[in-house]
Length: 445
Image 1 (tube, one colour):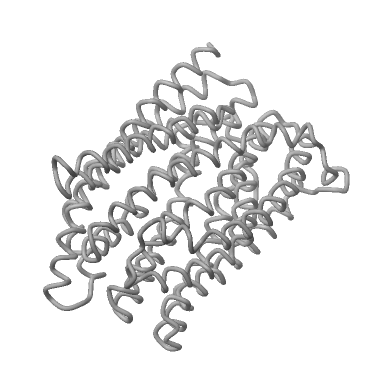
Image 2: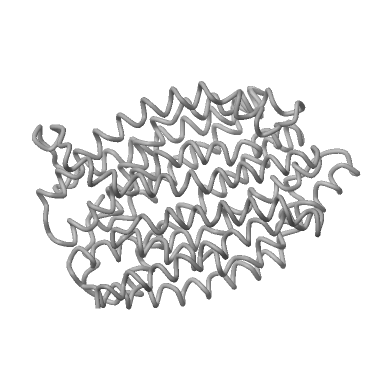
C-alpha cells in the first residue's frame, strides 16, 4: 500500500539508504530483464539482432529522457511543498504537471516517429542491422505515453517519500517482460519486434500500478481547480523541468556521437562495445538509486528550511557513494569477462573478437565508477534544492568531454580512446557538479 515518508526528521544516512534500497532492488530487476532480453535475443537470433537492439540504446534514451527529465523536474516542486507541509500547493503542482505531461506526450510521439529513419542514417547504422533497429524503435516509441505516465506517477510517489510502491510496480512489470520476451521471441519467433512488444506491454503495467497507488494517497486527491490551466505555475514547473530534460538530451547527443563513431569501426567492434554497454546500467544502479534518495531528502529538507540538514545528508551520501563504487568496480573486474561471454553467441572467431572489444570497454567503465557515483549524488542534491541549471550545464560538460575524447583520442590511442570517452565525460561533469553544489549551499549558510 502506498504511503508517504517525512524525511525532515531522523538519521539522514539511514533515511537515504532505506529510501534508496527499494529503488536499487527495482533497478536491479530492470537490468536483470535487460540482460535476460539480451541473452534471449542473442542466443535465439544471433549477434545481428542483439546489435540491432543494443544500437538503439542512446537514441531510445535520448527521446524518452525528454519526458522523463520533465516529470523529474516537476517532482522537485512537489517534494519541496511536501516538506513545507503545503498540501494544497502540492495538489496544484501535481495537477499542472499532469496537464503539461499530456501536452509533451503528444508532441514527442509525433516528432520521434517522423525523425527516426533520418536519425538512424545520421548515426551510420550498419545495413546489417538498420531494418531491425528501425522496427524495434518504431514499437518502443509507440509506448512513449506509457513511459511518461509511469514515470510521472512514480516521481509523484518518490517525491512524498514512497519508494516502495514504484519498486513493486517495476518488479511486476519486469517479471511480465521476461515472460513475454520468452513467449514472443522464443515461441512466436517475432525477433526484435517481439522484444519491443514485450517491453511496451510491461511499461503499461508499471504505469497502471504507479498511477493507481498515487491516486489512493490523500495528498494527490485532485479536483477540477487543480487541473484548470495555471500559466504562472506552468512557468515555475517548466523552469525546473526543462533544464533537467535538456541536461539528459545534451548527454544523449554526446552518446549519439559516440555511437556514430563506434558504428564507423565496423560491425564486430560495434557488437562488442554495445554488448558491454548493456552492463553499464547494472553497474550504475546503486549510484543512481542513491541519487534519487538524495534528491528526495534534499527537496523535503530544503522546502522545510533545514539547510544544514541538507549538507549533512549529502556529505554522508557522498561517502556511501565512494564505498559502493569501489565494490562495483571490484566485482566487475573479477567477474565481468565471464558474464559478458554469456551474451555473445556466434561463430567462434567472431564471438572471440566481439568479446575482446567488449571486455576492454567494460574494464575502463569499471575504473570510472567513483566519479560516476559522486556525479549522481551532487547532481541530485542540486536538483533537490531547486537548482536544475548547473545539472544542465554538467550535461554540456559531458557532451564536450565525450565528443572531444571520441574524436581526438582514437588518433593517439586507437580503440582505447573510444573506451575512455565515457569515463572522461563522467569525471568532467562530476567536478562541475561538486563545485556548483558547494557554491549554491554557501548561499544558505
